[in-house]
Image 1 (tube, helix red, strand yellow):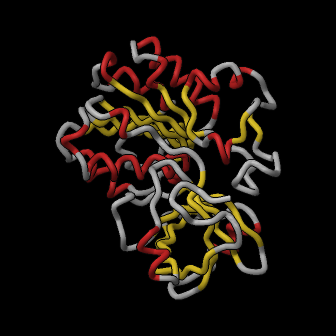
Image 2 (tube, one colour):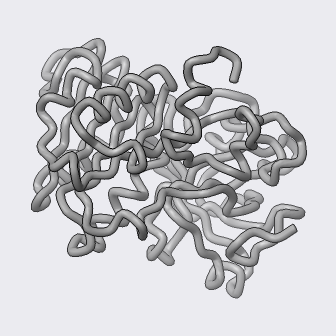
Length: 282
Protein backbone atom coordinates (compact mmCIF):
# COMPACT_ATOMS: atom_id res chain seq x y z
CA UNK A 1 0.00 0.00 0.00
CA UNK A 2 1.29 3.46 -0.78
CA UNK A 3 0.36 6.84 0.59
CA UNK A 4 -0.52 9.88 -1.46
CA UNK A 5 2.99 11.29 -1.78
CA UNK A 6 4.40 8.00 -3.07
CA UNK A 7 6.32 6.92 0.04
CA UNK A 8 5.47 3.35 1.02
CA UNK A 9 3.82 2.28 4.25
CA UNK A 10 6.22 -0.61 4.78
CA UNK A 11 9.51 -0.59 6.70
CA UNK A 12 10.64 2.77 8.12
CA UNK A 13 12.89 4.97 6.03
CA UNK A 14 16.22 5.86 7.60
CA UNK A 15 16.40 9.44 8.86
CA UNK A 16 18.76 11.54 10.95
CA UNK A 17 18.08 14.08 13.68
CA UNK A 18 19.16 17.48 12.31
CA UNK A 19 18.35 19.53 15.40
CA UNK A 20 16.72 19.20 18.81
CA UNK A 21 14.98 21.90 20.88
CA UNK A 22 13.81 21.46 24.47
CA UNK A 23 10.50 23.36 24.55
CA UNK A 24 9.57 22.59 28.20
CA UNK A 25 10.65 20.06 30.84
CA UNK A 26 8.68 17.30 29.05
CA UNK A 27 8.22 18.62 25.50
CA UNK A 28 10.85 18.73 22.77
CA UNK A 29 11.06 19.29 19.02
CA UNK A 30 13.06 17.15 16.59
CA UNK A 31 13.90 18.25 13.06
CA UNK A 32 14.55 15.21 10.88
CA UNK A 33 16.00 14.66 7.43
CA UNK A 34 15.59 11.50 5.39
CA UNK A 35 18.97 9.94 4.66
CA UNK A 36 18.16 9.23 1.03
CA UNK A 37 18.44 12.55 -0.84
CA UNK A 38 15.88 11.55 -3.46
CA UNK A 39 13.37 10.54 -0.78
CA UNK A 40 13.92 13.82 1.08
CA UNK A 41 13.39 15.81 -2.12
CA UNK A 42 10.23 13.86 -2.94
CA UNK A 43 8.73 14.01 0.55
CA UNK A 44 5.47 16.00 0.64
CA UNK A 45 2.80 16.42 3.31
CA UNK A 46 -0.28 18.47 4.08
CA UNK A 47 -0.71 20.36 7.37
CA UNK A 48 -2.53 18.07 9.79
CA UNK A 49 -0.95 14.82 8.60
CA UNK A 50 1.34 12.73 10.80
CA UNK A 51 4.39 10.49 10.57
CA UNK A 52 5.19 7.27 12.41
CA UNK A 53 8.56 7.75 14.13
CA UNK A 54 10.47 4.55 14.84
CA UNK A 55 13.08 4.25 17.56
CA UNK A 56 15.25 1.30 16.61
CA UNK A 57 14.85 -1.61 19.00
CA UNK A 58 12.04 0.10 20.95
CA UNK A 59 9.00 0.78 18.76
CA UNK A 60 7.17 3.55 16.92
CA UNK A 61 4.62 6.27 17.66
CA UNK A 62 2.44 8.61 15.57
CA UNK A 63 3.58 12.24 15.73
CA UNK A 64 2.01 15.24 13.99
CA UNK A 65 4.17 17.18 11.55
CA UNK A 66 4.54 20.76 12.72
CA UNK A 67 6.70 22.31 9.99
CA UNK A 68 5.50 24.15 6.89
CA UNK A 69 5.01 22.00 3.75
CA UNK A 70 7.30 24.33 1.83
CA UNK A 71 10.18 23.98 4.31
CA UNK A 72 12.76 21.72 2.68
CA UNK A 73 15.32 22.02 5.50
CA UNK A 74 13.83 19.38 7.77
CA UNK A 75 10.66 17.61 8.91
CA UNK A 76 9.59 18.94 12.31
CA UNK A 77 7.89 17.03 15.13
CA UNK A 78 7.03 18.35 18.60
CA UNK A 79 6.77 15.51 21.11
CA UNK A 80 5.80 15.06 24.75
CA UNK A 81 7.93 12.49 26.60
CA UNK A 82 5.13 10.37 28.05
CA UNK A 83 5.75 6.72 27.17
CA UNK A 84 8.51 4.24 26.46
CA UNK A 85 9.07 5.30 22.83
CA UNK A 86 8.68 9.04 23.34
CA UNK A 87 11.02 8.98 26.35
CA UNK A 88 13.54 7.21 24.13
CA UNK A 89 13.07 9.79 21.38
CA UNK A 90 13.71 12.48 24.01
CA UNK A 91 17.25 11.12 24.41
CA UNK A 92 18.12 11.61 20.73
CA UNK A 93 20.63 14.26 19.74
CA UNK A 94 21.65 15.75 16.36
CA UNK A 95 23.26 13.06 14.25
CA UNK A 96 21.34 10.19 15.83
CA UNK A 97 19.37 7.79 13.59
CA UNK A 98 15.59 7.35 13.63
CA UNK A 99 13.07 5.64 11.37
CA UNK A 100 10.24 7.44 9.61
CA UNK A 101 7.09 6.21 7.87
CA UNK A 102 4.60 8.58 6.31
CA UNK A 103 3.01 10.94 5.94
CA UNK A 104 -0.36 9.43 6.81
CA UNK A 105 -3.94 10.51 7.25
CA UNK A 106 -6.05 13.39 6.05
CA UNK A 107 -4.95 16.94 6.80
CA UNK A 108 -6.71 20.27 7.15
CA UNK A 109 -8.70 21.45 4.08
CA UNK A 110 -6.71 24.65 3.68
CA UNK A 111 -6.91 24.87 -0.10
CA UNK A 112 -10.70 24.73 0.07
CA UNK A 113 -10.79 27.40 2.81
CA UNK A 114 -9.05 30.14 0.82
CA UNK A 115 -10.58 33.59 1.29
CA UNK A 116 -12.02 32.76 4.73
CA UNK A 117 -11.04 34.02 8.14
CA UNK A 118 -9.31 31.12 9.94
CA UNK A 119 -9.93 30.44 13.62
CA UNK A 120 -7.57 27.96 15.30
CA UNK A 121 -8.62 26.58 18.70
CA UNK A 122 -6.18 24.37 20.57
CA UNK A 123 -5.75 22.92 24.02
CA UNK A 124 -2.55 21.70 25.65
CA UNK A 125 -0.12 20.11 23.20
CA UNK A 126 -3.03 20.26 20.75
CA UNK A 127 -1.20 23.27 19.37
CA UNK A 128 1.30 20.99 17.60
CA UNK A 129 -1.08 19.66 14.90
CA UNK A 130 -2.18 23.20 13.99
CA UNK A 131 1.12 25.06 14.22
CA UNK A 132 1.83 23.92 10.65
CA UNK A 133 -1.42 25.71 9.72
CA UNK A 134 -0.09 28.92 11.25
CA UNK A 135 3.14 28.58 9.27
CA UNK A 136 1.18 27.76 6.11
CA UNK A 137 -1.11 30.80 6.37
CA UNK A 138 1.59 33.31 7.35
CA UNK A 139 3.67 32.30 4.33
CA UNK A 140 0.62 32.56 2.04
CA UNK A 141 -1.04 35.51 3.72
CA UNK A 142 -2.84 36.89 0.67
CA UNK A 143 -4.90 33.68 0.31
CA UNK A 144 -6.76 34.06 3.63
CA UNK A 145 -8.63 36.62 5.70
CA UNK A 146 -8.02 37.19 9.39
CA UNK A 147 -6.13 34.61 11.45
CA UNK A 148 -7.30 34.08 15.04
CA UNK A 149 -5.19 31.78 17.23
CA UNK A 150 -6.89 30.68 20.48
CA UNK A 151 -4.72 28.51 22.74
CA UNK A 152 -5.53 27.06 26.14
CA UNK A 153 -3.30 25.21 28.60
CA UNK A 154 -3.93 23.78 32.05
CA UNK A 155 -0.86 25.29 33.73
CA UNK A 156 0.90 28.47 32.64
CA UNK A 157 4.17 26.52 32.54
CA UNK A 158 2.69 24.22 29.87
CA UNK A 159 2.71 26.93 27.20
CA UNK A 160 5.44 26.35 24.64
CA UNK A 161 6.61 28.63 21.80
CA UNK A 162 5.96 31.82 23.80
CA UNK A 163 8.26 33.81 21.50
CA UNK A 164 6.37 32.51 18.47
CA UNK A 165 3.04 33.60 19.97
CA UNK A 166 4.44 37.12 20.42
CA UNK A 167 5.71 37.07 16.83
CA UNK A 168 2.39 35.84 15.47
CA UNK A 169 0.51 38.53 17.40
CA UNK A 170 2.62 41.20 15.68
CA UNK A 171 1.61 40.07 12.20
CA UNK A 172 -1.11 41.92 10.21
CA UNK A 173 -4.70 40.69 10.57
CA UNK A 174 -3.63 38.19 13.22
CA UNK A 175 -5.08 37.92 16.72
CA UNK A 176 -3.59 35.73 19.45
CA UNK A 177 -5.60 34.80 22.56
CA UNK A 178 -4.12 32.56 25.27
CA UNK A 179 -5.62 31.20 28.49
CA UNK A 180 -4.31 29.08 31.36
CA UNK A 181 -6.62 27.35 33.83
CA UNK A 182 -3.94 27.93 36.45
CA UNK A 183 -1.87 31.08 36.01
CA UNK A 184 1.54 32.00 37.38
CA UNK A 185 3.56 35.03 38.38
CA UNK A 186 3.96 37.44 35.44
CA UNK A 187 1.47 35.42 33.33
CA UNK A 188 0.42 38.08 30.76
CA UNK A 189 -2.70 36.37 29.37
CA UNK A 190 -6.12 35.25 30.56
CA UNK A 191 -6.59 32.95 33.56
CA UNK A 192 -9.57 30.65 33.00
CA UNK A 193 -10.98 28.36 30.35
CA UNK A 194 -10.00 28.65 26.71
CA UNK A 195 -13.67 29.00 25.78
CA UNK A 196 -13.76 32.25 27.81
CA UNK A 197 -11.76 33.80 24.97
CA UNK A 198 -14.37 33.38 22.25
CA UNK A 199 -16.09 36.64 23.17
CA UNK A 200 -12.80 38.46 22.42
CA UNK A 201 -12.16 36.83 19.05
CA UNK A 202 -12.61 39.17 16.08
CA UNK A 203 -13.65 37.48 12.84
CA UNK A 204 -16.55 37.31 10.41
CA UNK A 205 -18.54 34.14 11.23
CA UNK A 206 -20.22 34.06 7.83
CA UNK A 207 -16.85 33.69 6.08
CA UNK A 208 -14.85 31.87 8.72
CA UNK A 209 -13.48 28.34 9.06
CA UNK A 210 -12.45 26.86 12.40
CA UNK A 211 -9.85 24.16 13.03
CA UNK A 212 -9.57 22.59 16.47
CA UNK A 213 -7.31 20.16 18.26
CA UNK A 214 -7.07 19.14 21.90
CA UNK A 215 -9.21 17.42 24.55
CA UNK A 216 -12.50 16.24 23.07
CA UNK A 217 -14.60 17.99 25.71
CA UNK A 218 -12.90 21.28 24.90
CA UNK A 219 -13.42 20.79 21.16
CA UNK A 220 -17.10 19.97 21.64
CA UNK A 221 -17.65 23.10 23.75
CA UNK A 222 -15.66 25.20 21.28
CA UNK A 223 -17.65 23.87 18.33
CA UNK A 224 -20.94 24.66 20.06
CA UNK A 225 -19.73 28.20 20.83
CA UNK A 226 -18.61 28.75 17.24
CA UNK A 227 -21.91 27.44 15.88
CA UNK A 228 -23.77 29.86 18.16
CA UNK A 229 -21.53 32.62 16.85
CA UNK A 230 -22.70 31.77 13.31
CA UNK A 231 -19.82 29.74 11.86
CA UNK A 232 -21.35 27.21 9.41
CA UNK A 233 -21.18 23.58 10.53
CA UNK A 234 -19.60 22.70 7.18
CA UNK A 235 -16.56 24.82 8.08
CA UNK A 236 -15.80 23.32 11.48
CA UNK A 237 -12.95 20.78 11.55
CA UNK A 238 -11.38 18.74 14.37
CA UNK A 239 -8.19 16.70 14.64
CA UNK A 240 -8.95 13.53 16.61
CA UNK A 241 -6.55 11.42 18.67
CA UNK A 242 -6.75 7.66 19.09
CA UNK A 243 -4.32 4.79 19.66
CA UNK A 244 -2.81 4.66 16.16
CA UNK A 245 -0.43 1.75 15.66
CA UNK A 246 -0.37 0.61 12.03
CA UNK A 247 -1.20 3.99 10.36
CA UNK A 248 -3.02 2.32 7.45
CA UNK A 249 -6.34 1.18 8.95
CA UNK A 250 -5.46 -2.49 9.39
CA UNK A 251 -5.04 -3.09 13.12
CA UNK A 252 -8.31 -1.47 14.22
CA UNK A 253 -6.91 0.19 17.37
CA UNK A 254 -7.91 3.69 16.27
CA UNK A 255 -11.48 2.95 15.24
CA UNK A 256 -13.83 5.92 15.65
CA UNK A 257 -17.38 4.87 14.94
CA UNK A 258 -17.21 3.34 11.47
CA UNK A 259 -13.90 4.96 10.51
CA UNK A 260 -10.22 4.66 11.39
CA UNK A 261 -8.49 7.82 12.58
CA UNK A 262 -5.15 6.92 10.99
CA UNK A 263 -6.68 6.45 7.57
CA UNK A 264 -9.88 8.53 7.48
CA UNK A 265 -8.63 11.26 9.85
CA UNK A 266 -7.07 12.57 11.91
CA UNK A 267 -8.94 15.62 10.57
CA UNK A 268 -12.73 15.26 10.47
CA UNK A 269 -15.53 17.69 9.80
CA UNK A 270 -17.85 18.47 12.71
CA UNK A 271 -20.69 16.71 10.91
CA UNK A 272 -18.69 13.47 10.81
CA UNK A 273 -17.99 13.28 14.56
CA UNK A 274 -20.55 15.40 16.41
CA UNK A 275 -22.75 12.43 17.29
CA UNK A 276 -19.76 10.34 18.39
CA UNK A 277 -18.41 12.96 20.79
CA UNK A 278 -21.44 12.69 23.05
CA UNK A 279 -20.74 8.99 23.74
CA UNK A 280 -17.91 7.94 26.02
CA UNK A 281 -15.83 5.12 24.55
CA UNK A 282 -16.14 6.09 20.89
